[in-house]
Image 1 (cartoon, helix red, strand yellow):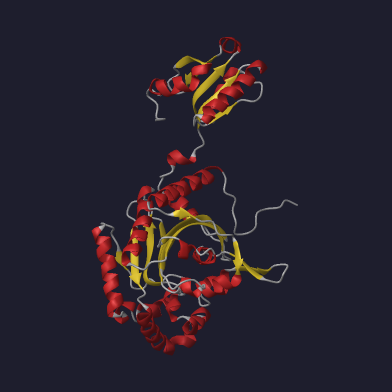
Image 2 (cartoon, rainbow, N blue to C red):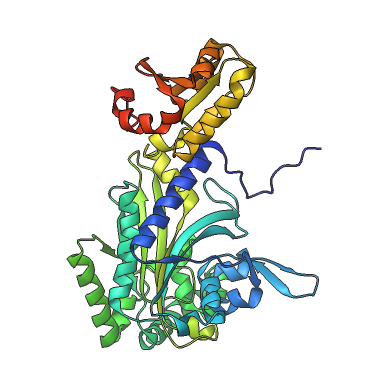
Length: 433
């Protein structure tokens, strides 16, 4: 019987693998421009880490974690999100005590949630994100938002909508939670089971319910903005002013609460509708947190971060035809040896081209010249490198531009030097520059 992939997972190959690599590399480069450093926490963590950080009221902990007991009967969980693991890493390695703050980290890798598989949503998926930990200021919150916005702009996504809200400080949230409980209490028995549990654990989570009847109740629920302390209100207004100064457009959405319990103060999401009208909803999100580091036995410091789903970004970019020149496999050079005697030289030439930074392949089997040209065309090679008996004897190669059909003989000991100096001549009327 054939063994297939596990339900809710998918194989990333071909154009999707090329697209993922392009997206991830671009996001890494931009993160490093903002002075972020890469960290790589393990895929498995002690289950307690996520229960303490993400929150018992969250759907992630209550429904979606992949949790098992290992051979020593310890409860282990495949990470459902990165932030808790990043904070654990920083606390355990005393990074926040030995480095200048905020410590800026970026990450990339798979996460696991036991959700109902559907179009574009998997049980194993990939996230890229950042965390700035160890210092509390509205400016850092805005820098993180600006970083995320810069990434989306660099991916050529137009008309990204930044939705932003504040969950206030602890004083604000305490007052707001009491108001929500008072509002929802008369309707509680008619609400979904999840919301009945959220009512006691964290009534803010009710605002994120997707059940239509409960959504109708949420429309008339109290709003956070009416319970903000003066300090929290002032901070949020300053965050918005900073966004204005950076000319980053936004919409204040006072129903936005995010799905994880550790958030406080500024929370945000990036929404997108493709050029064809497909509404992707939130393609990235994040927020500020005050107590998470201390909750995980670290110092009493704040942090802020965000994450993007790589699968979601890939779908958006492909939908808007923004990966046209990225997804296709192509070659700079296809080396074509004519006969067995030319293969050794062909391998030497291919290696030299690769070391010079050119994407190169060669024909390993006996084939006629016309057949090799057809292979070069299928591989979307820009140039063919032809090596026959005469070329071996003269220590030369023939380089042919496969678009213009122009060709040139080049001495083997000056191959890369000649290519680099005469590249414009080879590329005349082509689009490889």
